[in-house]
Image (cartoon, rainbow, N blue to C red; front, side, top):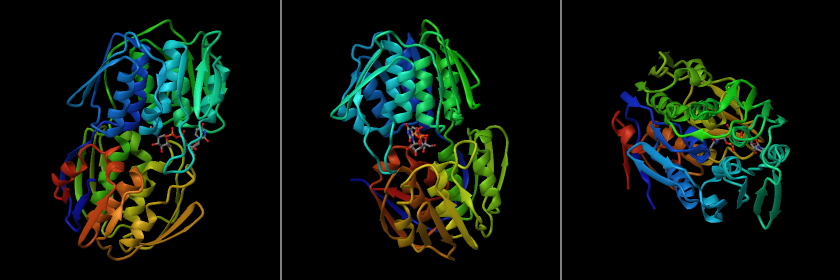
Length: 417
Ligand code: UD1
């Protein structure tokens, strides 16, 4: 099992090129199932979750090759409609293949995704919506068997909560369904807009992407296209956090500053400077970083839950006391114990964490608990005194493409061992 060994306290300085977005690449890799002809996806990050999505595509009869950061998929004739339990377990977001397989073939059998490290991951909103679109769903022993006896048809769907995955699954099922689908209270995350833009380029008819009402007119077929995956917002936020804890100065290239407004505003509140053009952010750390009186995670355009742990790692050394409330996931403070072991002063009460800034953190032996929690430990380690040994880094590899190389290039002392 691999680990990162980090010598903290090195100031980060220089240019970093931001990788493509995992949360956009995964639904787009499911969406290629809807297309006849070749899809060429550029800027795909090299991540274990992306490899898992490619394995799912291959397992159902698609040709899928990754060359550098480009994935080429031929989904002319998917030969299977079942996704094995083993593949479903490899990646929780494999549920996104449900809408795509239903859209393309009218049926799908897959394992019910269980809970995960963030708490339960229910899919009731996905299933309710698909039922309204004509899907019959039977569940036995954790396996969902979905059929469309009378074909898929459009529907009016109001989501009780703007779930990212449910919005994506409905979109995927709706583009080839008969008639119009209208999603209200849809999630507005930029990765959903990226998925919709890909589908439109393939021939889909979608209006209102990026707003809370999305209208989809079903079309007969979609054809493959070339598409460049958007930059990763959360990886951008992570590198900013790493610069903030080391008193550093970074220029992030190939990013999408507009999709980061909520995050950049938060960094500016802590006293960091973020000057931005469309695809570049010039960042310099506040000296000292200031505490945030109160911040809560919210659906987009609010402050994202995926940046909560990473920003917490910055607040550990801020001047003053910060309060963070997690409103999206039940169990998303598992990184706190590791941060405390590294010298942080954090109290958790229910869904709130109170972070009293300390002058200095120190290295320790810690284990990544989940993807972003692990990234928070990595961030804290870079700003701490001494050596940190970070284990269970397979969590981090799910979302970060060779982070040690990216960080070493700007002055970090980090080795993968
Ligand atoms: C996606 C992102 C993840 C991010 C999350 C919230 C991907 C691959 N993952 O996950 O990184 O943290 O959005 O921004 O894009 N819920 C239900 N019933 C449902 C669906 C969701 O109760 O049917 C609840 C969940 O338990 C959770 C909340 O809604 O508490 C948000 O979930 P959702 O927006 O669906 O997140 P994901 O799509 O799983």
